[in-house]
Amino acid sequence: MAAWQDLFWWSNDGLRLHARDYPGEADALPVLCLPGLTRNARDYEVLARRLAGKRRVLALDLRGRGESAYARDPMSYVPLTYAQDVAALLADQNIDRFVAIGTSLGGIVTMLLAGMVPGRIAGALLNDVGPEIEPAGLARIRGYVGRNSVWPTWMHAARAVQEANAHAYPDYGIEDWLAMAKRLYRLNSAGRIVLDYDLKIAEPFRVPGNEAGSDMWRALAALGDAPVLIVRGGKSDILSAAVAERMAASLPDAQLVTLPGIGHAPTLSEPGVQGAIDRLLARAEKEPASD
Image 1 (cartoon, rainbow, N blue to C red):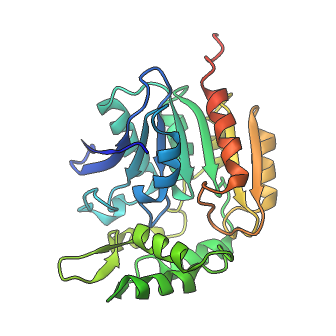
Image 2 (cartoon, rainbow, N blue to C red; image 1 turned 180 degrees about the vertical axis):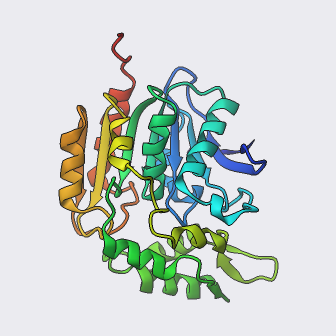
């Protein structure tokens, strides 16, 4: 399995940001993995290890998560700023064209980034998110994001994660819940298990409209002719079947994969999506048509 190294870069407003850098062949398109609202680079470990070696994979900690610094201004915890942070990484690493994989918030950032760096996203995977977000899902997320959660043992944390997410992953066993807990939480200096993000990320998210941009259908269209894979959990309360189908129809080169029995959001390690990811990467490797 490919090992990763820590990569750090600086945001425009002076935050030290972090990514896991999995090595790959220099002539292959790199892959940027952007996590969801309360998640971090660890969410992509299985996928990154599967792809790494052949291609470089950067799994990001967005500001306020994981090993990335917490923002001085909590109102900078918005998708546009996250997209600017990713653009700063592209400049720092001299990355021209790349494939973006974005889960939930990471997918929103991917769509915004398409307009900021036109023509440079060679392919995109939008995981269980689209230009329109279901109100029920938004209400659910607003109900838990930013609420402090402290546990004495990993088993306590796993049981809490199970209670909150059993509807989304009905087939999970205790080992799966423990693994998810270790992606969501960290051990603090006092020996307690705490959430691995700045609780202040909730402040802008609770303001209606800050969960995405003003015209996300236009942002989606900025992906242009790039191949796009839309992944939807069949039980998702964030991305409706109707919006997912409209997304696929609105893009010139899009595929929709729905994973039955899974809620928000697929982990992208499911057998039903791995082949589609491989096909997306193969299509993205083709040189873009010249003007």
